[in-house]
Every structure is written in structure tokens, then in C-alpha cells.
Image (cartoon, rainbow, N blue to C red):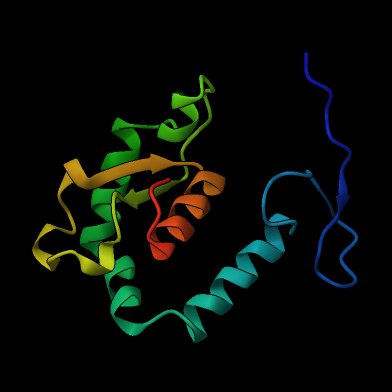
Length: 127
């Protein structure tokens, strides 16, 4: 059995909560939520905010997660980990809007794998 990593303090100044090392973000759930809300409110472009906030996307996302609940990238490594994000396979900003909801272009990923894929997509790399 692999050893567990020690918990560390949340990266938010003054927060006493402890978080798992290696989770990728270093913030406790409360501060992750606040940071995401701040990003969505002030930095996310209006088109994607409208798309991801829409009822059609939320329905497609929910259906996809119920059909494919495990992270595809972790499964490729032999790890069973719950998926939390639905990723557009490829840089979605180049997609024709009519295919945003195409189930064959969606991929379930955990937050860590989704962050890696998204960064890679914007750099123009493969995974």
C-alpha cells in the first residue's frame, strides 16, 4: 500500500483548514468554491459563461456524468477515480457551436486530469 501524503494548510491566507497534498489546487473546498466564483464573475469570457451556465449544457453534462462516471485518463492508467468534469475533447473554442453538445466529443475527467488537458489544449499539445 502506498504511503499517504501529509495534509498541509489551505493556500488561502489565514485559513486554518488542512488539505491533501497533490490535489492540484492546494485550497480547501470553501476557498476553491470562492475562487471559482470570482473567476467566473470577473475573468471568464461572456460567451463561455453563457454556454456553461445554460440549461442545455447542464443537462448534457449531467447525462454524460451518469453514463461515464469515472475519469477516462485515470482509467487509462489503471486507476478508478470519480470524474467531476466533462471535457470537450479538443480545443472547444475552435469548434462549431452546433457540435458543442455532441456526446462523442465529451470526456469525463477528474479535476486534476481536466486541468492538465485544458492547459495542454491551450498550449497546442496532445495530453
